[in-house]
Length: 114
Length: 266
Image 1 (tube, rainbow over the protein chains, first blue to last red):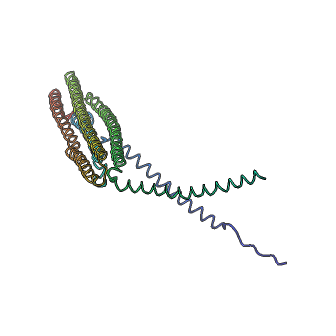
Image 2: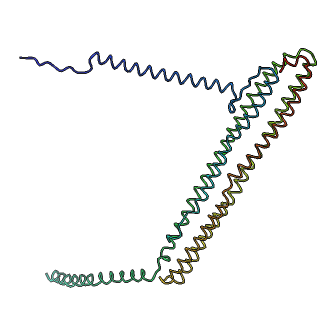
Image 3: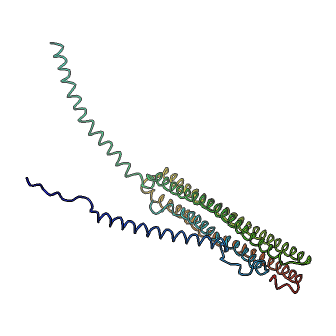
């Protein structure tokens, strides 16, 4: 009897290697992107921790001088007022939202439909 | 056998009677129902027929919108509270940061003072700066507190006014319904219904327009808050001016104490 030749099944070794290489490349790119992001975040955190959080003002004079003290006390005040001002819009916006909700009651009915 | 034949005869009599009764009674009652229905639909005006349902619809709608307003107010209160807590925390952190940096500068400045007079002048200068910072912060706090109290007061006043307007609207609607109901009780005919509807619609329209006019005249809450912020910011500037004045004097005094060595601390 003539033995039938069976069709090859599954992946060939070359195909498997190619898939592994592609996965490796993707993983490498992903790792590189993640590393870059982490570095950027670290830089941002470092910057924000050394500079005023709001004004980005910087004390440029040498430490221990009167000019440096003048600068930092000025930035101290500026930062504080800016922090406060940041919330003004929220107060006004919330008040307007409530005002609109009140005005909507005026549209509770249309008398012409009765 | 006799009993059976009697029974059959009795059934024979009863069945036709029942059948005939049903045959007459069903059409007659149906006719009666139809007649009653027609009578109602021709003599009762639509406004009177639907008044109760319409009143419920209006009241439900007002109540629903009023409930939404309550929810918005609660959200507003929560947001305000949360924002103020964030603001206070940010300010506290800011102060701590600059206090630390200022102290570092003071420490470095002290190393430049070599004589007792210079050391005393530095101590005086540091005390003046620290006091000026504290005074300015107190002024900031007062201005901020005045702003917040003002905002709270304006919002409370506006809410009270809105609640009053809603109450007036509800009262007017109820009054219109009550008047219409009284009129319907007196005359619910189609002919009378027309006048009842006209009066009812006019009353509802007047109530709605009164409410809307009141709301239109009361849309300045954002402007009021803005004005409060401007007042607060003016207080900030006043405090800044006083601070600068105090620190400039302290700076001049320290430089004078250092004399020829003043350049070392500039």
